[in-house]
Amino acid sequence: MHNPIALLRFRHPTYLFDLLRELVSREMKLRYKRSFLGIAWSLLNPLAQLLVFNFVFQLVLPLNIPNFTLFLFIGVLTWNWFQSSLVAATGAIVDNRELIRRPGFPIAMLPVVNVTTNLLHFVLALPILIIFVLIAEIPLTSALLALPLVIGVQFILTLGIAYFLATFHVSFRDTQYLVGILLLLGFYLTPIFYDIQALPAHYQMIYGLNPLVHILNGYRAIFMGGEWPNVVALILLGGVSLILLGIGYRIFIQASYRFVEEI
Image 1 (cartoon, rainbow, N blue to C red):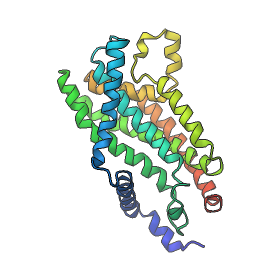
Image 2 (cartoon, rainbow, N blue to C red; image 1 turned 60 degrees about the horizontal axis):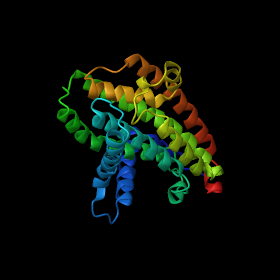
Image 3 (cartoon, helix red, strand yellow; image 1 turned 30 degrees about the horizontal axis):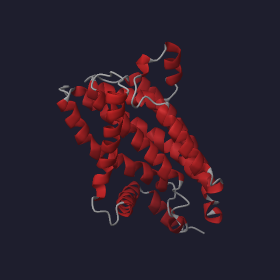
């Protein structure tokens, strides 16, 4: 039986923020434990992807996209945050048995930790992205003020999906393999290294159902065009993402009472 006083303390915003900070710090330390380069790997990984894709799609199969290096880097960073968060969140419960078994521990924080940790990697890479913007001689404008909106929408969307995956994986351990397949397909069905404007109009309409398309368009409008993104589309996507988050969170909480038994 959980202590009601303890539960009230766990719900205090200051406590939850401190707990999130400690858990993110713990996640970062565990991820780079005994690693010589440490957190630098969070930057080396997307840069390595950038080099490979640049070689393939600029020299082998040229796509003729203006400022392709910048175009590609935005896509890689955005996708890596999304993919890494979902992969980590899928195992958020089964990989943290010791925390789950602690009476009164706010289990719902675990997917938040996964998404926030990978958000930190995304933010750490932004200075490099800005360097690419400056190299391409693209001016930094007031459109940067819209960056928190795009990041916020992606965070809410990713967290909503994360709650579903974390819940399902407790009962259906094949979820992690299914997620891997879906993310692989999603990588190629998301315009990370190609421009959907080159596709026929009816395909572009189908692509519009992919929420990451609107998020990518938002980042690229800010950094490549120096323009404000489509705020209306982002607000609508944010509203849908909030609904998804609410449903995912509720399902997660209802299932959480069985987590200790099932893990």
